[in-house]
Length: 308
Image 1 (tube, rainbow, N blue to C red):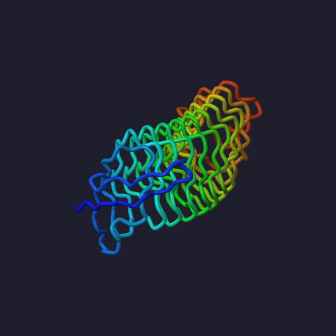
Image 2 (image 1 turned 90 degrees about the vertical axis):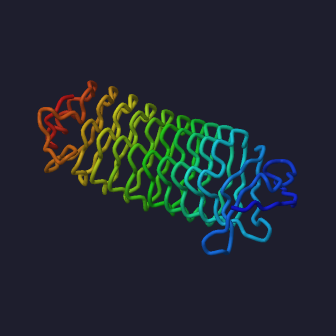
Image 3 (image 1 turned 120 degrees about the vertical axis):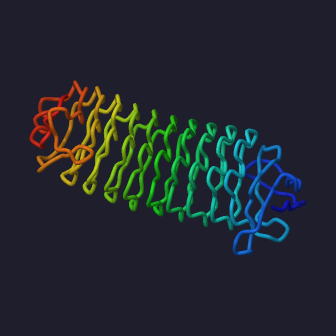
């Protein structure tokens, strides 16, 4: 590992002041495998508003490495330069004071736990070109109120936005086929979600405990709604389930105690997890005590024989 010094003055209108680049001891870097750029492996500076330079002693910065800024509690904002294509596992994990981040075009993946625990992060714009939002990428970003997910994204990983308590709405772009397990679990302020026709699987506990969610329309094309997908959505009033659905996991809508309306067509068969046919022990809609008589009849015609 090598330390590279920097003496350039960094200007950032966004941050409202001129910044002098950190001394060489603040960044640790290494050459990437191709030898045409460097990877930032650690930051040990004082934090504040950090503008990462595009080059360090002639080597273009290509990657923010694994855990590079982890636990930098004093980091308040960071601008990542053009030319960076990868942000590593846990790169900014537990940066509690981080309020804003500028991610450049060219990044193709937001890695595992990249911003996990950044509890002061208010908003983030994910650039066009990103195809994957990794597992726990924004988990427990409790102040995150808005996020723009570009059309290029095709995969939202497990727990990607889990515990984002301030997130009020989200539009999932066409091209996403699977909403990962617990992807939006405990997004307690989430009022609306738009799910595109491209989605075929809504993962286990994907929207569990989204306690502000009032209604959800599951689009034609979804085949599987996994266990606990919408359980304990205590304000959920109505849900539309299309004919394409053939699997509804155990407790998928359980404890939605304000659920009144379920729009569902009579279909051949609905299954629980492990491919067990509905039986008297089925709990898919258990504790949904306010379901209308019409919705109960519709569910029974669809093959549901469990408790309400």
